[in-house]
Image (tube, rainbow, N blue to C red; front, side, top):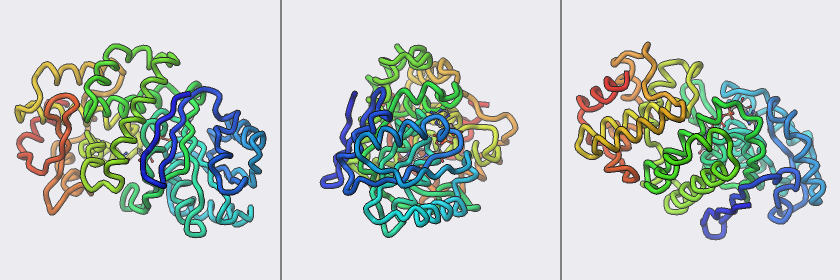
Length: 361
Ligand code: NAD
Ligand code: GLY
């Protein structure tokens, strides 16, 4: 087992990464204020791991008061489903010391995390992420929330878990496409702040995709270490946490423009990172070789390096102009001054953005 610490003073917590963690209760018992928990999962993950986790927790002396099984899908990450979680917690007589254990991908982690942040003004939260994306990103760092009809993640809170238990065995059942989408966020860490890791991924991408235990474990560990470092330095996104949004301004346009139906988030981020590389190159910040390395690695991972053909330039610019990352009327982009040298800027000529998008059509 590998462990990463998210160093947040007295709210510091471990991210445990390894095999067979769920069946052993993940060491959760030691960090809970009381030996009681409610598990929140969905109808896909529940049947796969919704028995092993309660059994593991019971073996560690934690009583599971209930397993809340929600419908699967981003469309259920909303206030209606959240209200159902509160109802079930009340029905199970969960009190302020009863822990909430989120078992699933980022949708469950975000929703259950927000329920934990708000139920009885906050109960202990443990994240048990089961997608690659959630293991390397969503479950770490304390962003929780649900969507509103007017936009994604508009209702939420920063609320850190007591522990993150990333059981890599759960990735065995993850569809290939979801694994690849998670890999986009893994590559992102190399691009924003860890050039050696980017190089490591260039050497191991196929092994990671083939779910080689060592390569995958190493990729998750290094990703979590990067995320933990960023969160510890800037928990509330005053500055450097915004670097984690590399590619996301373009990705937001792709996801919104295609109605959130055809592209997975990680796929949109992949194409968005290629666009960010193009813009960086055009501004003289990223050499042609590095731009090609980025495009090549993303392509080798079977991730998109171009945007959806049906999205017009007007669509991109309109959607990005209203992006919530726009600051005082200026769209802020994450660009790269070399691989590993990401920075945020609101000073990018529209012409450069147009050219970058055009180069990825
Ligand atoms: P997801 O939670 O929808 O999971 C993807 C699919 O895989 C779902 O159908 C799910 O049921 C299924 N699944 C999960 N684990 C499985 C397993 N082990 N085996 C088989 N199937 C499994 O999607 P995701 O990509 O994990 O997360 C996306 C969500 O995460 C979005 O809502 C996004 O806003 C959020 N997110 C949050 C943060 C954050 O910092 N909080 C960061 C990134 C993304
Ligand atoms: N996924 C972006 C963040 O956690 O800040």
